[in-house]
Image (cartoon, rainbow, N blue to C red):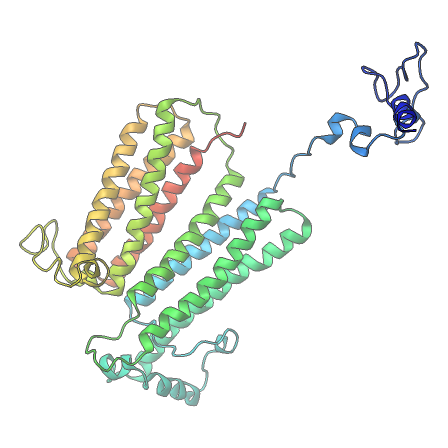
Length: 412
């Protein structure tokens, strides 16, 4: 019975070389009937598994749908919004306004005080915390309104950034404009922007805590400030990179050893620029820019005497203002040297015009950023100049990401 069943199954299989649309059926010499008028398989394919009934061209996976340019423009707009939040946060820190709002509510605090009684009640809440008691004990209500509005603007801008990510993402998702990999990336961006808001309040709380054993000026933790800035830089970089990847076509560059080295060099330089910008958070958190206001020496020495004053030694890197400023200087010098070497090396390689423009722009912004940093230091950190220097770090990181986008591999 088994042999008979196997023989019957063989009679149902088409002969080798016969097409799905027609041809010989079985071992006989005569032609078999063609397929029926419907879209299904002909009678000679009855009994075959479904995956063997379909032509091979239909079994190939269809390419993912192309992402519309509107998604790329949206991501670039979001990266610009994040850049505005970073700059505004830097100004808030420089004007010492970040601790003026002593509580956090997602919706309730969106309505600012309007009457005199509401302002006085808000001022009384601020007077209960260390910054007023130690630093601003003679502050007037008018002065309080200024720092309050600075922090309020920063928080409201953060909410605008969150809406700029979440609402268009939901719209594009519903329209079916996001591929499956893009959906995962967009979800990660929306999650990161929500985490960024929570991290900002966690940072502010560190400056509102009572420290009986400390007589230092109340300030937020430099570790939390660096985490807050670092997550913002990650959000900005990811949004900018994704937007550029969607809008800028890839160059069909010849794969040479020099080009591979240039691509690796650009990746390393971008990482160094990111690290230098992140180290600026420790400088701002510890007011380390006011420790030594001379260049290139720090005071009368190339290496200051109090560079390793804290014990254990590792504490100096993150808690000693002298060491923090020294490290930021070294990272800044290393960044300009790396960018200059990258530019000189790129001159030996034939590159497209747009890529050459990206390399030149990177060098120009790096030189400008170094000039701003030195000027800020020598002039004892004036707020407008320091804010411009912080904005320059974003511009420099943007140029590096643009160059990396220009040097992307062409998919095979």
